[in-house]
Image (tube, rainbow, N blue to C red; front, side, top):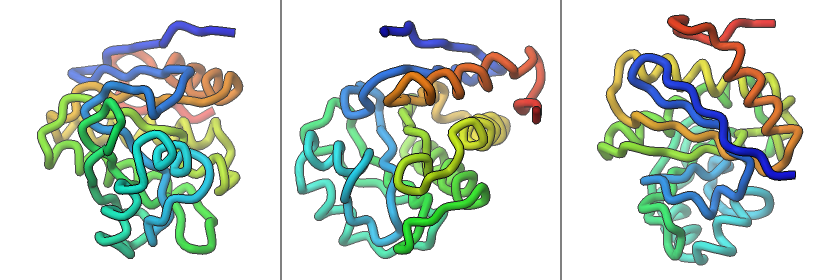
Length: 188
């Protein structure tokens, strides 16, 4: 079943939730749900490497290892995006936490701001291999985007690209729950 993207403008920030393939996004940067050694195995990382080319992984691994929660930027190979931001939402143990997801999201957004990028597309960090609950992830990532936008002008457009309908519904529900004029999503 196809869904139209859901968008809301909150302050100067345009937040969008899309059901789709992150490797097909034409944003200035897409985010890879990375481990801190930056090797690209399964899930989002595997899809990015398969479509964008192994050079993305080679370039990333030269920048690592990084601390879990940090992010680094590489070119995006054959992808439509200009950059690939590798946000380490987990360590080598492939375990994640609310703190790591929040930090990795903020780090990815800070990288986009540092590069002066207008748009970024992010997957649901830590919900695949990391096994983190999707709705909790949505609350953390949306809160991080809203918090970032209060202190940094870029990126002005943040698109959460979800690969399946349950994840899309979780993120869309959290985005819809953000009251107009409120800086952060409400807790349930």
